[in-house]
Length: 253
Image (cartoon, rainbow, N blue to C red; front, side, top):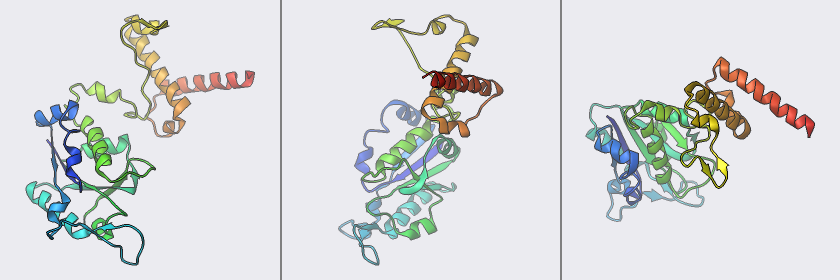
């Protein structure tokens, strides 16, 4: 089982996302345990304030170190015997991607701190944080939504959660490529037919078609992914052919 503890300022935001679909089934099956610990409960004052003005002046408020670290200590005691990996969700973090999801899924205990306001007191980083992550180069109200994204992506990488290992391995980004196009019944819709090869029943031809489409889609939409993708000799041959075809089209325009 993987233990995931989330430390937010607004725990009510988590009332629904983890109680449905794949994560709900994973929790019920005992594959993951997700608990929410309200940082405000460790404020130490009757008003439950957990922020203050920044030293040196400036706009906004800063989350205090004390409430966060006390909340963290409470989950450490609850999971005695584990050594948690402590992730801070913040704009200055490294960009979360599939490699991070796979890496974090291997941990026994994850703690995710949801940053807010103008940030957290730097001493939280110095004393407790092992990783800082961001879900993209844009501004959100707080770290609650990013924490949900991380938990969802990480959960999919935990053995048994998807039921079938191939389901995760064929997802976009798992091996560094975008997923191939998918089709289902009916075979023709609005005069647009599904590719005949997918209806052929020839598994090897289907595999090759899907791989080619995955490489083509990645080359067209996210060529940057190819720099770190896991590519076979067959993949490289396909990419050379695709690149030659694209050059040919450009030269005739």
